[in-house]
Image 1: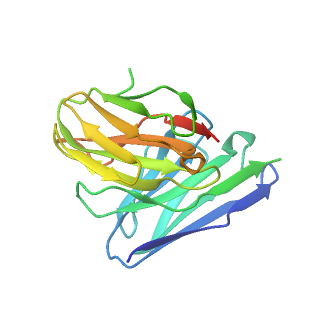
Image 2: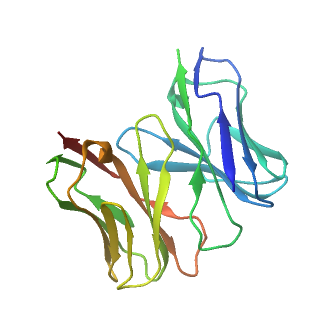
Length: 113
Length: 111
C-alpha cells in the first residue's frame, strides 16, 4: 500500500531564516505531488505541483519554491521566511492524470517568530 | 465566485442526532467529487469518490450522495468521534486533474 511521509510535524523559525520541508511517498511510482497551505477557515491553497522529476508548476507567486530531486521526493523551500509564511503545510500525492483522489500527509505546522 | 461551496460552515449536533452536510459546485462538467475528513492538526483523510449523479457510497455512519449540482454527506446517529472538519473537492471534466476544494464544514458532536 502507498504511504506518504511529511516532516517535521512542527517547526518554529525566526523571520529571515531559511526553510526546508520534505515529503516522500512510498509504494507508488511517478506520482503527481502537491504542496498546499491551509489557513484556518480558508480551505486549501495550492502552492506547487509536480508531474515528474524536475517539473514544478507554481500556482501562487511568493516567497517559497519547490523542488523534486527524485521521483517520490518533494521539497518546499524558502531562502528567507516572512511572518506571512506561517501556516499549516500539507503534501499530497495522486496517480498521474487520473480521476483518483489525492492522499495527504499529516502536515507541518510552521510558526514564524 | 467559488466553484465549490460547503454549508454550513459549522455544525453542532447531539450524539445520535442525524444531519447532512452540503457541497454545491458550479463546474460545467464533473469528472469526480471527493469527500475527506480532517482531524485537528492532521492532513485530510480520504473518505469517498463520487463520479455520476445518483451514485451513493457508504462507510459506517456516513453516506455520500451526488446530484448534478451538489453532494450531501449524511451522518446517521453520529458519535463524538465523528467530530472533525469535512472537506469536499471537485475535479472538473476536461480541465486540470487538480481538484478544487471547498472550505469545509466543522462538525462537533456532543455526548
